[in-house]
Image (cartoon, rainbow, N blue to C red; front, side, top):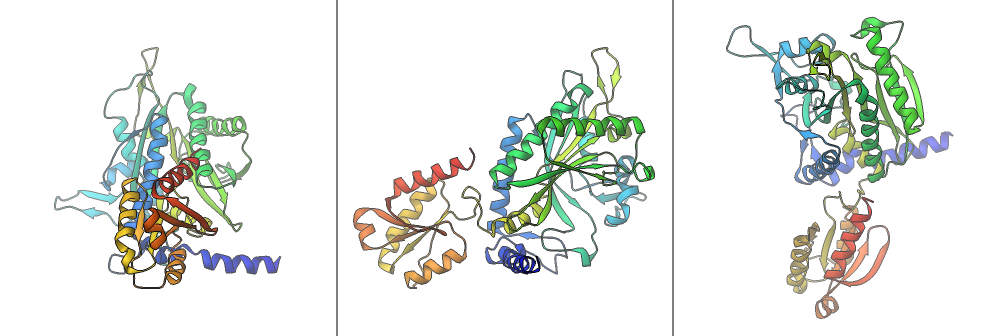
Length: 418
């Protein structure tokens, strides 16, 4: 066991997302900007954007509507929600405006803002469920000793959404969120995971808000949904959010470490605090139930885990650069540019390495950059309008026309979404 542990530690060093993130030029930190505030570099920003677009496409199929809310809110908003009393010490100091007595906070959570969006207009029982989604950036003051790359930061973006539904819709909506999480895990090759049911501590109810009746209803809804989906689960007492129980997905990465990715929470309490309502079939006012969900958790943490799980060798649809053209000498640079332009026009992200270096060195350097496909072009390729294809980790794949290679890449990407 000790030998296995030492091997795991050595492998973890190689997969460290801070090291690989720097090598692949995905993100950086600046002491002048501030600790725990990541700067996404162009390749990292593109990767993150593809993740966002992937989830937005999935969410659209499930009836979510995208919204945008501010990075700050009046202190009173978070007093109403209960976040100020629970997280006030972990938030940045209030922002004071020139108007006396006016205080704002950098938002620690998106849910209070989403409650106010729901209140924008009256709702009938026929309007529900209302599903509001946002890639919302939040801020929490973590101690400097607790900061760690992208996994523990002070500013991060949640793939957040809140579902406002009727009691008779709760289980179905919860199951649909589980389906989204499972789809994400399958697409990104997270094969081993368990679902952790986090309940409140019945012996320390002071930590939580809301009535016993509502807590029992919320906990029952989660237990019923995981049973329906047949998930492998563990139950933890005392790990619930202060406003409701939750289901957290614990993923095992390629070297056996467990990470918490994705969370779903049932909440009867914020709708009460914000006095949210809908008009029922009986023409009376009723409280909706709120489901909080973030399948990625946060973009920062998710990307960090994905880097370490894949060792920076991302799925072809996600990777920053899908192919690089390597001319064997300068006289083939024009043809290399022609190939790269064609592939980029086919939406295949392609670079050219036209450095005055031997082709062997170019191959080694670009394999270290984890680019999936290396396209070598020389005299024969130019005369026959071909490319010689090498695949990361598999070596020579033979010669293809640029049209055939474009189709080959497109087919491989499509298979990753099946």
